[in-house]
Length: 310
Image 1 (cartoon, rainbow, N blue to C red):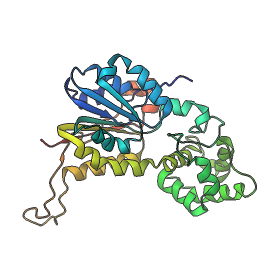
Image 2 (tube, rainbow, N blue to C red):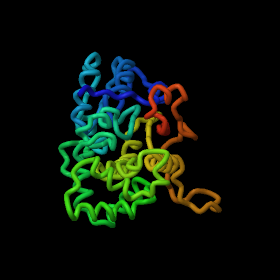
Image 3 (cartoon, rainbow, N blue to C red):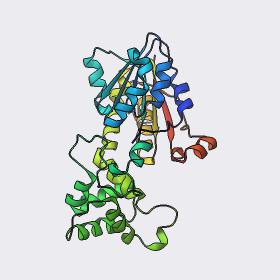
Image 4 (spheres, rainbow, N blue to C red):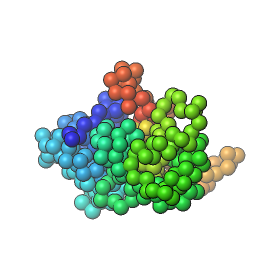
């Protein structure tokens, strides 16, 4: 299956990145290299580093970036390790960082990956197939309380207790192996009057995917290190696709801009914490109506941008 992914907020992201021909850039979520191909095309003496943990994405990105191969380094790894890898390679800082979070169209549409509730497939959901933890492991082996917490915290699923209870009940008779088997359990756990307006499995599948890939932990644990790795004036562009990710990014950028912990009544700051820069997007940039019409999956996207202080 060909790796296909439509880059969301492409023009807006490239404009905010303010790519310099001699600059050094990091695309932490390379995907099919939609954003990166535009960054690479603007470089002369500069360099682009791209990381992704998905094997199919690495193959697709490497092929797409061939015209600029001398200016590009592609690395298969999670973006949480990107700064450490670049430092080992002798890179001391970058002029821009991009994270395009979430799941690619390819991952959703490739039934064998188990990301989609619309395809009957093994419960996998690993973005990096080298990892051991799968969604099936969570569903079949985690205690009921842990499953309930995952669905509640990562999926904001109000029927999490019932779904978790029915998962445990179902697996006591037979291992839950496929997406459609899980769909039936979820459907039976949600009263009919609450199933309108979207697929009943959407929030549960999101929660399992986030837990399987530790997505929120990786994001929260990477933002400060990546911001510190920016050169003065460098920009950090992050595209999120659900409220949990966006909240983490929004709060982190706000703290980086104003880290002072002194009480509001203090005449001057005494905590000694210095601002890392400024938030460029006071409100998130969202897709236009035209983009949403062309790519419905973009409708929940939000772009936030932070600039390192000079």
